Length: 480
Image 1 (cartoon, rainbow, N blue to C red):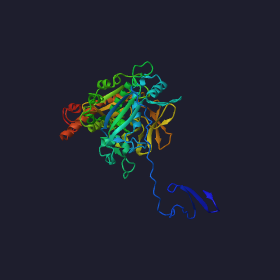
Image 2: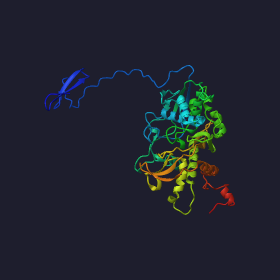
Image 3: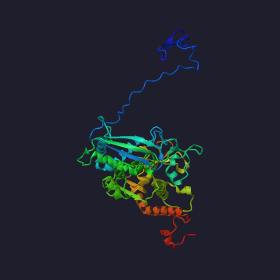
Image 4: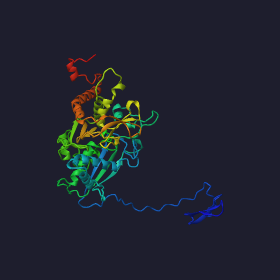
């Protein structure tokens, strides 16, 4: 742009249509190559773009002869919530994000093999050697490549923004509730999303450090199986959202169908799961406990399997709902709002933080301070409630209590975005909470099963009816 006078300018631009420079004045710019001015709605025809060069995907390593490649046809059996870059939203471009799958695989790898490391530095070194990362010296290339194919079930009809009417599903999907009644609910992806997960393992026969005989392929396959059984897609996976199973329909006609079915346990018990993972983990406690959740020393509770994954999921949710509401001392004759007192809330902190909406204030929540005095807003729950897929096509409701040391710090009350808060007390002991769950689990499972049988038969009997311990103490008569 060149100035001619005090108020006149010459605008210089290159014209791609006539391939020469053109000029115009600022008061009424006219182009020498066009009859109309640029103020006119008429525009020159767009020149077609040249064809794009062939795309080269540089994310993957070159395939070598000794690399191991496998393909898993998977399908979601529960709705997917979240999983996009924005919270509480679905990703329409990458409906199934590979980065999220890789993050969960690294988590379950640490839950399976992290206890073998002596300190955090050794754990980071072994994890970076297999899964990649950025060290102080230089970036480390991952030896595991993941990509997807044949993704289906993600069309416009798969989004669900309706109100959640099921109380049990709404209990775990409370983040989907809108802040106002007239606002829409957060979208969820309906079940039935199918995709093929491809895994490439470089140097599959390479052994881990510290004299271990476990190879890279064994570690990756064990992490894949643990993610398939206890993980999922998206967020809220520890409450059963985005649960997966092997897509047996896609396996039909394939010669390796029996091998794919072997990815699922035959029964929902620790022995069958340990046989599938190839190690003793659930039945073998890991001491001492660390801040990192571990499958070694975890406790598995399971119910009766069935053909419906939704019923198995709802039964597992009912265990969480009933147990969480029974935490804390019982007081009869008081309004329901007074039962949510400070002591009960402090004990519920062991099931995950934050706890929002305290005392009727949407901005009030319960957080925690670590040993360094830094305020933290989130703490993952050590308990996983979800439907466990079995090899025969059934699903069992499970509650998996991961082994983790009690957080070193204190609970604090927070309000809004303020980092400061009042000390609410110490963290509850997870061993005591686990003992309470063990003692109440049989009763919770029995009450849920009797309630399902009553609804199935059309009976109006209460869940405690029949031959329950309560009725036996009363001589088999219901309390009027």
